[in-house]
Image (cartoon, rainbow, N blue to C red; front, side):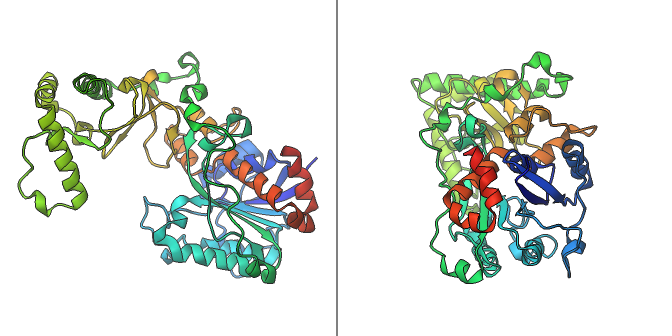
Length: 432
């Protein structure tokens, strides 16, 4: 039995939809600007999202937007993301969409507003933006914390909806109490701490538990590494092993290793470079001097890496005490080959940086990526390129993290929520 109604703004392919329906909710309206994402949403949830939210909310909120208990949405993050220009509300094309949310809140007064964005939204460069968001929500009558709730699915055990993906996001949960109360109760803390839940240890994750057998992957050749990619990794694997022996079994240094700067002297004019780059050059020079013979032999074996692209002549070892590169999770980045332990993967992103699973010598498939986002195994992408599916997943919300944060918000403020929406409490309390 459905116990509460919600609307899904900037809906993407339905991360919030999946989270809130798992808690007993019914989506009564959705909006998504990207037509391809909207098609995937409709395919899976049986509801076609409306398009651009702006004409439906400005200047008057359309009758198409029904009454609801919870307004949720991952409003566009480009104005706040580190990968964007970080213009915040100065971004005239997307940053002001938050105010379209406010128009709906003012017109419909749902009991709860539940928003998600990149962590950088609450970073130092967005201080004014963050304070504006909190102030606007309080003036609209919503009890919210000035301290951002930051959470990631890798901090949550699997039985509570967690997954081995580091995806730190800011969640904003506001409960309608009226503007006077909202502006007086300003000392509440974040909904959940940015810490592992209970005694759960995220280091116990194993990404392999979320992978499907290679024999069951249709068209697996699409995800397998090319001969060149294997050669790049093999070269650095050779490096890892000989340096480990030279270091008496100690782990590799954590600073970026730049093969082009394994030299006894710093380059001419290095003093004019940014200080961070000077620091790395000095560290690479010192590393080379310490291991000159081993490094020279290694470079000679691999033809000085002359046929490697510049970004593949760099290694970012973040795999701690891992014994081999081929047991790591890797990414081919402009800054080099980044290697991490095979516990959990970095956040799925909307650009092409699909994680490489060293033990499988292939990339994550869209099916595996959707499981990392907490979407059900039955979720379908329809007929579209994998690149579109990866992008849509990278733009999405973690289902498990969203459901957990909302549950904890309702549990913490149960009496306040019960005053305005006992049906929400009745439904979500069944999932505590």
